[in-house]
Image (tube, rainbow, N blue to C red):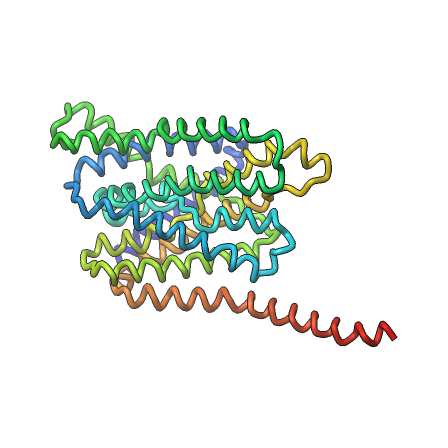
Amino acid sequence: MNSAFAKTITLLILIGVGVMLRGKIATKEKITGIKNIILSVALPATIFLALLKINIDVNLLLLPVIAIVFNLIILGLARVILVATGLKEEQGKLNSFMFLFPSLAPGLSCFPFLAEYLGEESVALAALADIGNKIFVLIILYLLAMQLHYSIFKKGVEEEGQSKFKSLLLALVKEPVNMAIVIAIVLLSFGLTITDLPEFVGSSIGKMSAIMTPLVLIFIGIAAKIKWNDLKLIVNLLALRSGLAFLFSGAIIYIFQLTDPVYILVTVTFFQSSCSFWPYAHICAIDAMEKDHVALGKQKTFDSDIALVMLATSLPFSTLIMLSIFSFSEVMLDYKNSLLIGICFVILSCIPIVIKLVKKSRAEEEVKVLEPEMAK
């Protein structure tokens, strides 16, 4: 059996174990506990080890810049795409989709597959790129959320918003993943690597890192509960997002003339990460601020329920895409294939949108024809 397919089957089995454990780990608190172990222990340890095993090159500083450029491009396209789907009249849904659409969550969706298929160097590269994505999802999206909120609720929220922004910056500094990245970069700046640390330190961090891949895959099986309401629209949006990501990664591979298989697969895979939890956290925070105002009949800025459905759907969707990428990794080494797949995804996902627009246009024309007759 092909080794890539064998690894894929192994990972699918671990996801299946998670599905079977849903009955025993059913409460939100238990699921959150598993996620916290991943994000606070396993993932920081994996990134710390990975960073201390590579040679930092000045060119690698481009990675966060490339990531945030992707975020901004997709954000710019998001509203145009969502208006075309007919969501203009449903501002809550439109804003929620717009926030989740350009965000990335490589920690729960990308890093485990990179570690399993490509090794620790690839995780380090993706972790550096994720710095740009973190700035986008934690700061830029929060500022945008507050701007949208102020446009509807203009009084009595400025001080609360400022306090929330300060606490958000503090959370950014205190986040274990970010602390691991900063400490690793400081050690590297002094010329220290993992071999220079005491053996018990390296061994302990290594054991914490070892639990990441199986724990994340089991978590995916437990937590990814897809709801069928609005699922058709969400899957269509995720397919379009994936297509745009393939096009972007193909363009990056061509522009920078990447030839190293690890760099190419990291580039393709990173931008296929699932939607980030942080935009949903911002949406929930804004919902809490608007609770009293909505009771008076005002429209909410976001729809947190639909945001949660998209967040949950994006995780298994991203998992399937990544398993496919690594199962056919040799095909993905040619940037032309990435561009071709992206074009196919975009065209297929745009077909339902075009059909909907045509139907809407015809309905409007019929109304215009009937209006004069009704006036008589």
